[in-house]
Amino acid sequence: MQRLKFGAFIAPFHKAGTNVTAALQRDLRTVEYMDEYGYDEVFIGEHHSAGGEWVSSPEIFIASAAERTKNIRLGTGVTSIAYHNPLWVADRMMLLDHLTRGRAILGMGPGSLPTDSRMIGLTPTDTRELLDVNVDIITRLVAGETVNAETKTHKLIDARLQMAPYTPGGWEMCVASVASPTGARIAGRYGIGLLSIGATLTKEGFDALAHHWNVVEERAAEYGQTTDRSRWRLVGPFHLAETEEQARKDVEHGIEHWFDYFQKVAAFPQMAVDGSNIGEMIDFIKEAGIGVIGTPEQAREQIQRLWEQSNGGFGSILNLHQDWANPQATQRSYELMAQEVMPYFQGQAEPVLESDRIARGGREELAGQQMAAVEHMTKKYESEVAAKDG
Image (cartoon, rainbow, N blue to C red; front, top):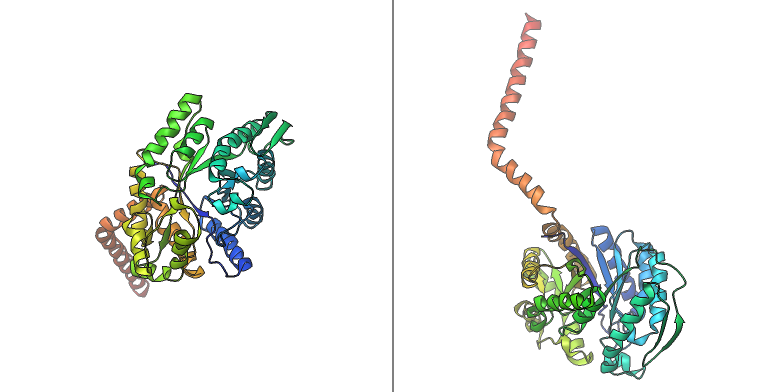
């Protein structure tokens, strides 16, 4: 297995009516300790309505997070590019590419909330049709082209980027996919990464994993692009504790409002969840196979299942960050993932486990040699003392 990257997808999800300022600071601190724990990347969402997802500009959030971190890569997850002039999307990312010294990633999608697009006169159909058009414009701009184009929302006249990227060849880009192959088709056509937000959130998403990458490869071949599974990212929810019982108790803190948001608020049926009380909600996460509320061992098993289902592997596993647990338990979950899950998929666990096995197997013999050495030196000392006394 190749080295698997680990990270988070921070929409973020928060309970309506709680302190916005404090919640955003917690989100920034989450990125900080993820950087300290050795996580590879984090993606920040863009939303403008429905009361639960509060980052309106992932680029601004990333600029703040970049100043607090050293190594972790920072992606938009995603920029709803149908809402913006594609020229300015590319130009803002150019700025972030320089400010972050190449740590920025542009994740693109149509926008998940109809309550967002409705405010600017667009339907979900409009935003999906604009996705392909705007990805085309952005990739051409990043490649250094001068673009003339007219879309449903914007007109570009001799549009070009005035700076060269900090990252040679331009920053990394990826496109979001939930359950349908739309994102996979675009990723293949333009030779960019795939961000499978629905990889575990629906049975269809899980079952379609291998098919989605097949679509990427087929489209890439059709358009003369190259594909790389290392740029395929899978998103699913995890909350870990030392025991499954503790993990279940932890998420009683906030899992109800997360379910309520997707059941009654967000008009986003692709994220359908089932359960009418806390116990049913927790059981649904496990029984539907969409995530883990449990131990590091259970997390390892879930990731292995996804790897096998993908029929060839992927590049990153991203935790769908949520406020299921209180901040302290949430941080402990990320710490457990870093300590007891990541090493098994990054080539770090086996060497030290092998060293441990070797030491265990030879302990009795080596302990005997140690005792013999002590006895030898003790007798040698006694002989020296006796010789002096004589």
